[in-house]
Amino acid sequence: MQVISTADQLEPFSGCAFVPTMGALHEGHLALIRCARKTGKPVVVSVFVNPTQFGPNEDFTKYPRQLERDLELAQSAGAVAVFAPDVDVMYPPGVDVTVPELPGVATQPKLEDHHRASHFAGVCQVVARLFDLVKPSAAVFGEKDYQQLLVIRALVANEAPRFSALQIVALPTVREADGLAMSSRNVYLSEVDRKRALALSRALKLAQGAASPEQAEQQMVSELTSHDLTVDYAAVRDAETLMPIANFSRPARALIAARVGSVRLIDNAAVGPTD
Ligand code: AMP
Image (cartoon, rainbow, N blue to C red):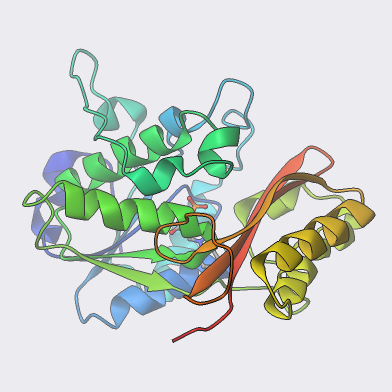
C-alpha cells in the first residue's frame, strides 16, 4: 500500500474508489473500504482532519490522530493507497480554495447547521477539493453522518458537470454490539458516559415504534434527557429533504445530536415506511 501526500502522487489513482476520512479509523471506516472494494476499482483512503469544518470552540486540536495505526488498518481492509496531505496541500497559501454553494439540505432548520454554523461549508469545501485532487469514479460515505451524506449528494448534483462522472455510494451505520454507533469521538467517553451514550440508539429504537413524528420526537427527547444527555436536536424529518413532516406518509429519518458530558454524538435511523 502506498502512502502519499501530494497531488502529483495521486495521478495514477484517477478513477479509483475513494473513502474520505478524518482518520482514527474504526470498523465503520473499514466497512466503507470493503464496500469500496466491491466496485472493483483500486481503493484510495484519505486521512485529513479538515480545520475548516470545525468551529472555534470545537475539538479540532484534540481530535484523535494516529496515522501509523490508520495505515495498518487501511491496508488490512484492502486500500491500495492512503492520501494523508498536509494542510498546505489541501489549502495552498495564496490559493483561494472555493467553498461551493451550500445545498438547501445543509440548512434545514434546527439540525446540524443550527448548532455548527460553518460546518457544512467546511465539509463541502474539503470534499470538493478532495474530489478534484483524487478524481475518483466512486466515493463511499457512511449513513452515520446522514445529513452530510445528503449534502454531498446534493453538492455533486449542484456542481454538475464538475462531478457528474462520480458515483456516491452510501453504507449503513456500523454499530458496536450494544448498539452504539461507531465514531472516532467514542474514545473521549468515560466508562460511565459510554453507557449513558446508549440512550441515543435506544431513543432511535423508540422512534421506530412511534405512531407519529411528533410522538417519536417526544419519546426520543424523553429517553435522552432521562439519562442526563443534553439534546441539540432529536428530530424526525423527510428522509430526502430533511424538511419537517407531520405524518409517516413518506420515508422518514430520525436524527439525533446530543451531548454526553462534553462529548457530542450524532446518530440516526430510518423510521416510518421504508420503501
Ligand atoms: P469521519 O472520519 O468521522 O469524518 O468519517 C469518515 C466517513 O466514515 C464518513 O463517510 C462517515 O459517515 C463514515 N463513518 C463514520 N462512522 C461510521 C459508522 N459507524 N458506520 C458507517 N460509516 C461511518
